[in-house]
Length: 367
Image (cartoon, rainbow, N blue to C red; front, side, top):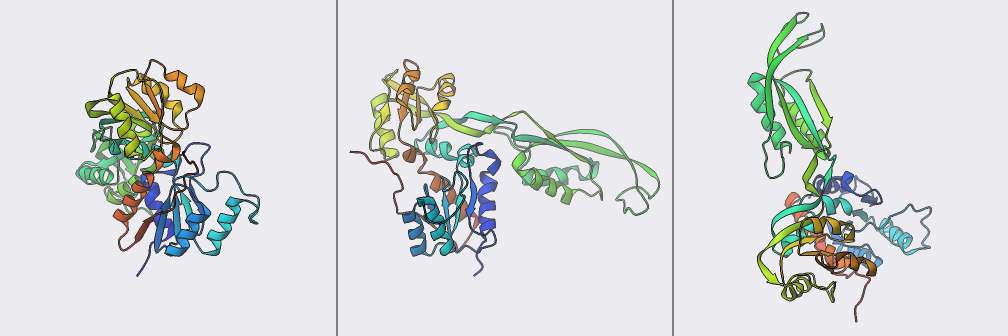
């Protein structure tokens, strides 16, 4: 049986959650291992601990994929003087690759906060803090008879999506001129003669992360030997990409009942929350991990509640009389990130074992 390589697995994950979406402080990506190594199975975990690596060894998993990076800052030596060094040495000894998909998975469409919203059954979802400068515009000049072929190739490669609409493009008619040199093999026109060809200026928006893939698809579908095209960086807001989510409960729920629901769904031993502002909850904002910085966004969105983690004592005052602020715990808010990766890998690789760790890596206990 031929197994996928580390590079193929990471490529699959990064097509969903591109590394350029990670925050500046982050260190997502491949941290230990060779990209060419074959992977028979993977073990998914929120955190990489020694116990998790030992579990991977026992399960004969050749790759560990985590949400939180094992290595946040550079290692000057790997001699076993720290827990991280010890884990890296153990992984290398047993040929186990380690990969992290962290804040890029938080910001990706369908990422961590979206999964939280899905677990709560929210509808009418939108990104709480969408990113900008994540898009580009691709413009290509196509002979009229080939416009539809090129357009479809670009759509199928992932271009042309604007908000909740796909297959979005614009075409304007004009004339292209060119003269083929003596070593050229022109699709239309004659060598040495200036040619005028009726063309369509075809343009559409594309995520920067997949622009190279879309360009390759466009070039493959285009009939010209030399294709004229432009790529423009955009400051447009990408409404599907960013941190946090906001949505509605199908029906308003009494606040105390909602808190009980949150505690149950996320398996939280306890909740920290402010005094309720309303007797019922309808609009819910949330952000997995340390998302308190998005509180002003949640207030602007007129959410009744904002769910996140790692809220400091004095920060709770910022929500007073504005909305219900709930801290469910860091691990609790991000645990379902493993379901995202598991589903992604099972969809793209057949006859391939994907394990979710049996070890509880949450370092916090409650009494």
